[in-house]
Length: 490
Image 1 (cartoon, rainbow, N blue to C red):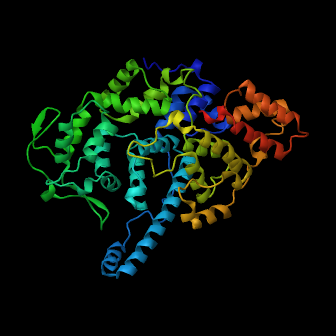
Image 2: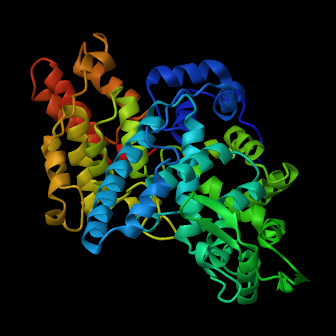
Image 3: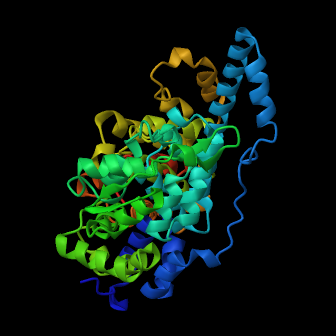
């Protein structure tokens, strides 16, 4: 169990699998570079990212607002009509910042020299699903995103504590309003059910007593920071997981991590995210043991996963449905193009069913085959035209529930422009020497595998109906491959 993959098994297919799963895919040249490293060094290349400089700048507004106190004062003193106007301006500013933040993160996923770090940030964002719809502060959403980046491979105990104290989470699960007279149970419930243990591994009593332990952990809205309010904390004895004491917030979270189910739950979820399938019981046990040996730290577990033969099982390779973000970021990378403008990205991801910083509920996105519906599959095919040929009209709307209420956004989308892909940067003269060589080059770059016979026939029939392999024909061919079922898998 968890035996390292041998050098004999390291080839284009397995290297591409690691690039797709530990990152967001990439070019044939990147895959060849990984092959040259060998399996051990290739895994180190991803996991030891702390040694790689990351020059990504923060959004210009991602810092505490020095005028926040004055704005609060003006808001309190304003007349009702002026207060409403100020509120509308703030809402408009937050909407614009969120569009910028989504684009900033997508750009970072596509270009970061630390792809595994960004992939883990995406995992944690879905795991601790927090939505701007309730938080309503782009700065706080950015701060949480940075928390996930900083703690991505760190200690589980420390991460749970940091997340519990994160301002966005304090607002999202109502912990900021919890006090000894009226303990709010939302975070206490979700930290056990969704974040750390799973259903059936705690009792209702654990929830109510855990909520009491967390009272006093709150949010200073004016200064945008976590605060402990001693007067709001319940200092009475609590009984949690069968133990009795005057427990506080950290005690409760530490007790969760100590539960036998804790390492099984989180390592199984990590395996499913990266491997694309549920882990069998024996594998879950092995991963949990590795996690405990590493003192509940993720980095050694991730190294073990990416080195293991089980991770490269034939049934796992090219069998994971790409999430909309994986589809977009991966497409940008294999097409070697720039990320489309912010409004286009906003529309692309919403149409495909994954609006970053706005998960559908506290459980996050279901993932897997749920990404594919008749509507979203058609949207992927249409939006391939946007990425390849710059055809914005193929996108349609941007998936808003009431477009008429967002005329400004619709106008900005219509005015946006996307540069087409440059075929000469993707395929050499040798690749375009014949239709046969072009098909092979398309498969290698876009799929890292062969097309199914039915889809291959469609592509060949199209090429047979053309004359020379002009740029237009090559672009249409790329779009055809991106519109196959195979391209939706990684």
